[in-house]
Length: 381
Image (cartoon, rainbow, N blue to C red; front, side, top):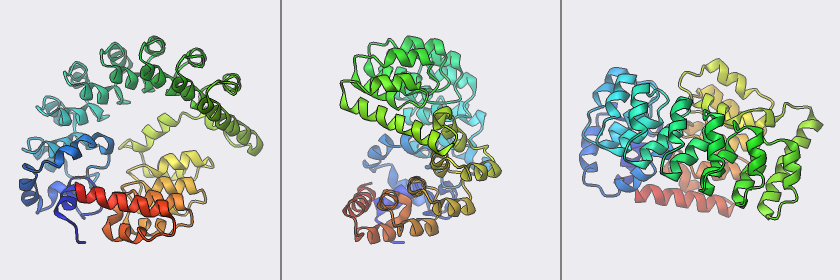
């Protein structure tokens, strides 16, 4: 597959299945990484590194010995990829938590395997991005999240408010925070107690009330109250939420409102989830459950094929955005009748240049535009 040098570097560092082996096991790594050191464009890549921490390592099960040897690699992005890896051991993470690069420490802070001693140290890291990553980690104990809820940086407090492990005490304090973004984080959290959601439903900031209207844990009487809100977006969110309630009653399906989607998302991303559990979730009658499963990095080829044939377009679109998709599955999704599925495929870097070029000639203008933007980003990086 022909690629520019920039795209090749990016592929080696980030996207799965472009190369057949884990990037640090590939023999051309030493040659490519020697060019990385002076490449200013990698600064742009490091800014988006945290978003794709689950996708930065091609092979989810390399030998731990090989993983360990790269803890001291001279390039910070390779050390960061080790820190983000789901099978990184506690001693590795403990060592990397003291790394000089805040990018590496951020990946350590976001890793669910992080040891408790490292958690406590990173909670007082001088770089806010590290504390933000820690506050978003579902594995962090509630007592430490309570400590982080008093952080001077509002972005850290926002992530604590949105973390499902946060204690009711911490959420209650954050619900009265002076920063609207912090209160919105609490309003989005599906573990937020009902009395706090009621309190936030009359918040002075409309975007906080929007989050309350979209929260699956918000009781129906609050949703009905928000139907008369003075803000159009709040009313629209409340109407959409109420429509889900009616759909549930009419179809006698299990309520999506009773399902903690944040916990489900954490479960499907957990490295210890079994193949049997994923298969069971793929067969769930609730399309939203299947959408969450479609984003898991641990799906087998057979499971990817099942989801690619799902009757619900939203599920196929979620699968098309999964960077663990094989080329065969992506080629199938690129020909999907629904343009939303093709758009997701066009935005997936794993699709490869050849498939993306084909999508630039799609009959839908949005698909063409998405494919062109992805190709341009690959060339820029």
